Image (cartoon, rainbow, N blue to C red; front, side, top):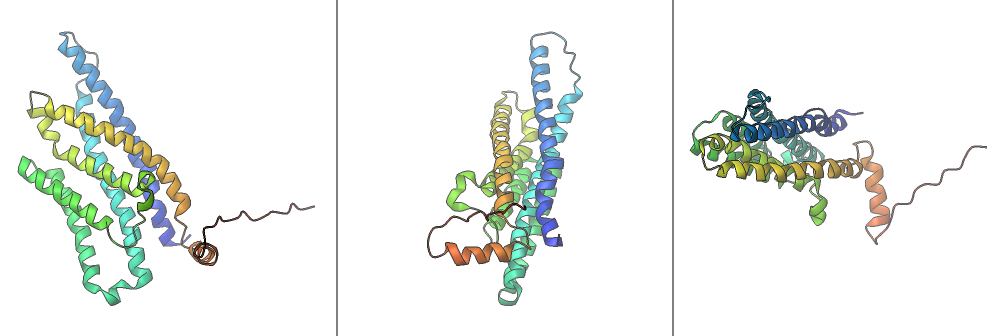
Amino acid sequence: MSLRDAILLLHPAIAVIVVFPLIGIIVNRALLVRQRRLQTVEGGKSKIPPVVGQEHVQSGRWLTVSVVGIVLIALAYGIVGNILDKQVWMTAPFQVIFIGLLFAATIVSLYLLYQAKPAKWRGIFATLTGVGLVVLGCQDGVYRKTNEWYISHYYYGQLAALLMIVSLAILPEIYKDKTNRWRKVHITISCIALLLFIGQGITGSLSLLEVPLNWQKPYVYKLYEQKCQIKPCTIEVPSVVPKP
């Protein structure tokens, strides 16, 4: 396996090892926090320790960083691969420099969002991070599957990452607002994101089948050029003759 193939598999590996376990922890802590809040509102004492709220918040912050991180890895694989294959630095060097600066600016904006306290700066850095993801996603080389956007791993992932950024940006407001308006917004965002993550598991498995490894590309593309560009076709399964 080449280095390029290893980088391709880095995205799903991090998702399985880091992101989805974090989602399970967050959902569990969210249910415990809600249960504890309902018990204390009724005037009784809850056996659920108060620390579950802090664990829920910290896990959510780590989830945002992890989701944006693996999205950037996936985008970098497609964009850098396109730059290397088509030697874009020879024909459009300023575009390559712009893309590199955009990656750096997106990472810095996410870090500053993680550290920011005032609402104004949280809004600014959240916007910059989101814009960075969207603009990078529009570059050549990214596998978007726009004609089938409703089962596109790219669109599910981008939307989930943007929702995580918004959720991180409004986090302090949840505890300041006594009307629970921001808490309801957070719950709504989290429920939508959870559905998207479930969709990510399905569409991600599909993308692993659709995106060939580096050594497979010449054979796949050659077959496509020979059979599938002139008329619609289906790739036939080669017959296997059993050994006597």
